[in-house]
Image (cartoon, rainbow, N blue to C red; front, side, top):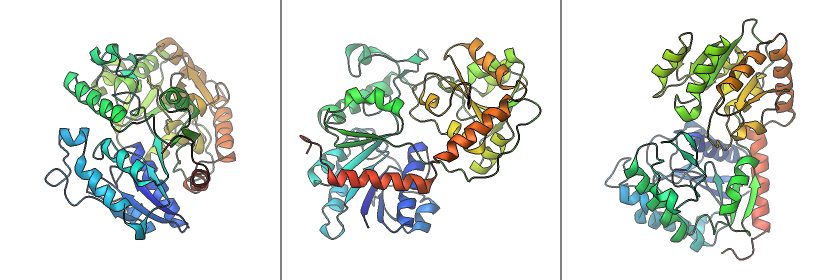
Length: 409
């Protein structure tokens, strides 16, 4: 039995990192490991943690109470670091492993100094690029394009690339500076988990040569069910936020050219733009996971047109587990989970014509069933369900306990 301490800002699902952290903690507790879940933001606790018997710890107060964290605390939260030091110095409950997921909302970079001083093996799952890039995406939201600037270089500092604006960019740059030069991350991280080979290639230049890196994809919460035949009439679905970088504008334009119907699951700032560009679009809002899966199963293909370096998109993997082909942008890690011309299609990012052509190709007779069956067989040959994921994660932990990277304290 291992004693494992998870660190994540939230104990409920607010985003992908929360989902993974909670799933991992609950899965490991369910097979007999002693799991504690430390969060920086007091609030609702996911039922899965409670059912699995995971002890959840949160600070008694946070910036005067409640869920708010002041801007200064977000840069360097001394009180959180002190509180976490007390947890780690409790010798009667000292963990064997510390696993870090989300930390930018409340923990701030300060807690990494505490982790190094505690001399406990720890690993960080890199769900995005916040360890290297101030806005965490290597994406220029102002220019709507991939950003190739050197983080914290002159061109980075002068670029208004943040989604919110210049003030937020200045705040993020300050946090990045403290993370890099005071907390010494990511250069001094001993172990990291990348969620795809794609993201590992991008992040590898920012970590120390002696950092132990591995790839472990995220767990996928899809129950295995018999695959349904593809619908007779071609229809597509999109699941996610309605923002330009998620590719919804490109999809709306391409679907109008291909004259196909798309069902949009989600919400966001681009909703009216979708309606204007594609009058046939059906927008259904956010749905429960089971409802989303039902919509996917009723689709000819799931479209994932994101135009930034997404580390490991879950939607195409969920579609494969349900036996549905996907059409994905070639700019993100989704290309690793979709075999072009076998389990779906890749299209050229930024090309409306390329996406329209793939939409047309996906509705050709027999293609949806051929690709869907291949996607289903490929996924379930090596499933990423929570139980299988937990086995792989435990092997990562055991490797950490056996091997200590040279030169990393």
